Image (cartoon, rainbow, N blue to C red; front, side, top):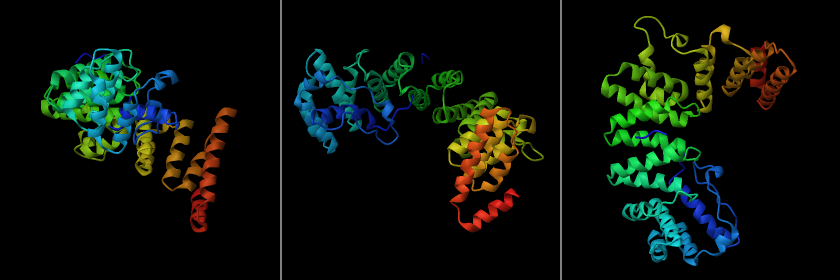
Length: 354
C-alpha cells in the first residue's frame, strides 16, 4: 500500500447531510455528533444559497433515514442520481453514504464508486465508506486503492488516524501481510498518533510477529502497547516478553522514564489510577522532576488517596513563580476533593498526610 484522524460511528457521516434538512426546516444549523464523533469532525455545510437550491427530495430522504426507513430514502434519491452533471454526482454521494449507513452494500458500492470529486468536502468520508464497503464485498483491490487515496491525500482529515488503523486491520484480514506490515512500520514513524490508533495497529503487529516468528516485531509491538495502549497490552499479556526467568519484573529495565510516564498517563486516561500510580512509582528517582510529582499526585487523587497526593505535593520544590502556581493549583484540587469526602475518610486522609 502506498503510504503517504478518527472515523466516527457509522451514522456520523450522515449527520452532515441531515443538517441540511435542519437548516431548511428552520432548526439548528449544525447536527449533534453521533456517539464517538466529535462536532469538529463534521464537515462544513454548504452556504445558504446552496441549501435553498436543494431538491426537496433530499429532505424527504433524510426524514426517512431518521425513521430508519432506508427503502423510502432510496426511492426519493434514486431519480436524482441519474445523469452526469454535478447535481447527480452529489445525489449519488449522499445516496451512497445513506446506503453505507443502512448497510445496503450493493447500492453503497454503486453510488460511492461513481461520485468521487477531489473538491467535495465529503470526499474523505466517501473514500472511507467506499473502502469499507469494498472490503465487506470482497473487492480487495478497490478497498486497498480507496484507503491508499485517503491516507496519501487527506492527511488533515479527521478520519485520517482511524483510517490508518482500519487500513492496517483490513490488509491483515485480506491476507496482505506485507501491506499490513508496511503500514505498521510507517505508523511507527508518525509522532502524532494516540493510543486509540496505536492500539489496533500494534495488535496487528503482534499477530504478524507471531505468524512470522519475528522477535523484533513482537518486542516492538509489546513495548508500544504497554506504553500507549495498556488495556490492549494486558489483553494480549505482552508483558511476559520482558519478564525474567528468575526474580521480579523491573519496568525500568525495559521502559525508559519517558515511556513509563506515557504509560502512566495512558493508564490514567483509561480510568485505571491504581496501575497508573504503580507506573509512576516505577520511574527511577533521578527522573522524578516536578512534572512527575504533579502527575503522580493526580493519579493518587484519582485512586482515592488524597492524603498521599497532598504529601507528594508538599515535598515539591518549585524553581519559580510559574512552577509554584502549578503546585498550588494541584493542592487546591486535592483540598477541594478532600472537602467533599465524608468525615471519616477526611480524618484518614489527614492521618495519611501526617
